[in-house]
Amino acid sequence: MLSAKRSSFLCVLLLAGLLAPILVVARPVGAAETPSATGSELGSSATITDCPAVVAALQNTGFEAPVIPDAKRQNANGNTVPGWFGSGSDHAVTLVSSGFQSVNAASGRQFAELGTDQQLIQDLATAPGETISWSLMHRAVQGQASVKVLVGAPGEDGTEQQIVSDGSGAWVPHNGTYDVPLRQTITRLTIVGIGTTANLLDDVNFGSSACTETFSRVAPTAPVAVEDVVTQAVIIRNGGGSPTAEMVVSAVI
Figure 1 (spheres, rainbow, N blue to C red):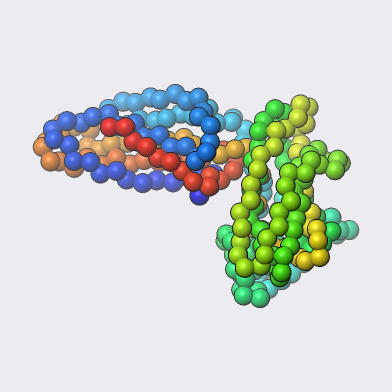
Figure 2: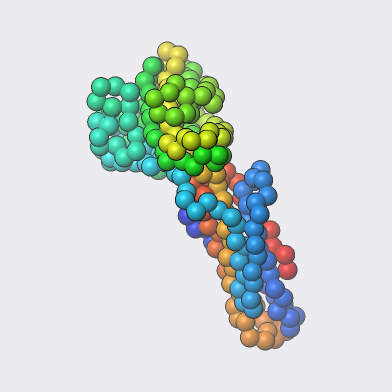
């Protein structure tokens, strides 16, 4: 998974006296081809993808703030939880840290618990007409548990995206996309606990789709002798607001 930050790797090439231009392209698996421009000069190249100028992304996607003690379950007042608020009178969010009842977070150290008929809510500034992605990790506290994922404007019921149902044995990923209607500049993600068993949630993402930008540099740039080693450093940056599930990286030499 490539979150909205940089990732890098090295390609080492043996060249027989010839320094060839190298183009490296990366994009999320399953993503549509995005119009891009490529530029290169001796020793460096870039694939410049048309990523959004303003990126929409949730806050506190892994429920890591506020920090609670190890192996604990704690109700946090909604005013203390960045981004998120619950549906109760104090907007409380139930946080759990790894090790509580032998369950570890899917990502990071903490996660959230969502009971029946409870809601987890976060609002996001969005651009009308934009396609935004959502994803989450889910499991039951025990038995089988379910949540409903709703997306829409604040004050509305929201459009049902998916009903997610899983057991307690492991974290299970779920994802989807949503097209922001015209004139809707704030979009609300609501996760509703349904059924009779409490849910666990982690790594909840909602925002601009993943968008990769690739930059590379080759050294040395001087004439290369036979069997000299040329090193290419590649930086892949996710300039979108959602993580990638997988990444395909291809190099043309």
